[in-house]
Length: 102
Length: 102
Length: 102
Length: 102
Image 1 (cartoon, helix red, strand yellow):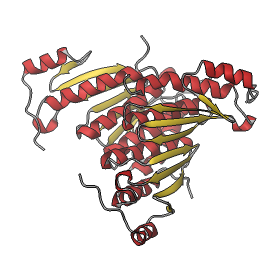
Image 2 (cartoon, one colour):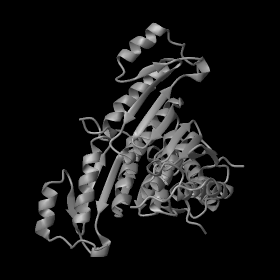
Image 3 (cartoon, helix red, strand yellow):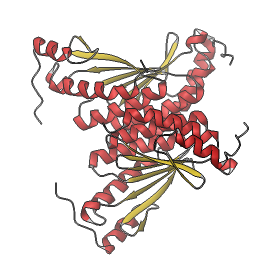
Image 4 (cartoon, chains in turn cyan, red, green, blue):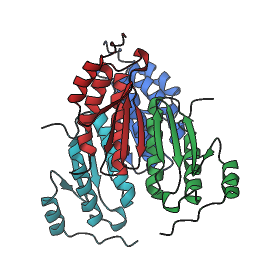
C-alpha cells in the first residue's frame, strides 16, 4: 500500500479548520476528548481501536480518568498525511456518543 | 445487600412505558439495539459491561453482527425488580452514542 | 473476495478434532468459554471483535455473566468453511488469557 | 472511604521487589507492557479499566501501538499507597493473557 504524501502546512491548516478542537503540535495533530465518565473513556478507546485497525493506522492514545488524548502522525511518511486527517475525522464524529453532556 | 422486591405486572408495565422499545418476555425485559456498525456493537457491549459491574447486575448480552440484544431479570428475586429497570434505563440512554444514524 | 467452499462433514470432523471443546450444531460450530470473571468475559468479547473485523467474519457472541458462547457459520456459503475453522482457532488460542484458572 | 497511608520509600521498594518490571518514577510507579498485538493492547486496556472501576482508582494508561504504559499514584494521598500496589499486582497478573508470546 502506498502511503499518502505529507501534507503542506497550508493543507494541514485547512484540514484543522474542519476538525473540531484539534490542534497541531509539530508533526502531530492532537485533541483531548473529555468523556462522560471513565467507562465511556474506555469504550471510546475501543471504538478508536477499531477505526485504527481498519485503517491500519494507530494513534497514540492516553487515558487520564475520563479524558482521552489522541495524537496522530504518519511515521512512515515523516509527517502528517491524509491518513491522519481521515482518522481524526472518524474519531471526532464517533466522540459524540461518549461525550460529557453539554 | 438486600435485593429489591419483585415488581407487580402493573409496575412493570408502567416502567416499560418509559423505556423506549423494550418489551416483556416472561420474567425478562428485552431489547434489540441496532448499532451503527459491528465496532460500535462491541464498544456498546463494553459500555454495558461497566454499567453491569457497577450495579453488580449482569444482563444477558447477545451480539449478532451490529445488533446487540439485551435481556434483564433478577434471578435472585425470581422476577423483575427495580434493578432491571434501572439498568435498562442506563443502557438505553447510553445507546444513543452507538446507534445507527437515523 | 471469493468465499471458501463449504466443508464436507469429514472435513468438519477433522477440523473439530483439532479445536479444543468445540462441537457441531447443524451448520454451526459452537463453544462456551468460561472466563475468570465478567470483566474478563467483556475483554474477551473485545478480543474476539478484533479477530472478527480483521477476517470480516462475525460470529454470534452470547455473554452470560462470565461465560461467552461463540457460534460460527458462513452464511454466504450456506455452511461451514475454512473461515469458521480459522476464526475458531484464533479465538481458542486467545482464550487462554481470559480463562478461569485451572 | 479512608484512603490508605502514603507508603515509605522502604515500603515502596519492598513492594516493587514483588512486582515484575515495575519501576518508581517520583510519586508514581510505572510499567510498559508489550502486548501481542494492537488488538490485545485494546483488550488489555478494557481489562485494566474494570480493575480500575472496581477499585475506584484510575491509572494513567498510554497506548502506543501494542505497548500499554501504566502509571499509578494516589493523588488524594499525595503519594504511593497500598491502592497502587494492589492495582499494579492485579494488572500484572492479568497481563499474561495479552502478552507477546515469549
